[in-house]
Image: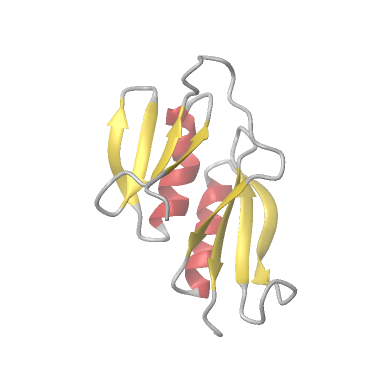
Length: 126
């Protein structure tokens, strides 16, 4: 459905401390960089962008907006979360089951330095 998604950050270099580890735990890597303006992650093309806003105003997060990445294992959900917090992200939901979503929904959430809410989910039963 989507080709790519972007979130605004004030300092892409600082944001990399969070995203390189968190997304690396899910098998994603930096596939494009644009100076101190943007960094993009993916497997073979830029799918998730972390960038300064085009209007040069301070970045802000959307109220109620979040982006979720699919994890292949529950361990990857933990690694995603742990790497993000180690990089400076804030906890927004520890790894664990969320049976109110679906019976096998296992997820974790963090907020980056600009308040963007990011999630990883695994649907495997164990």
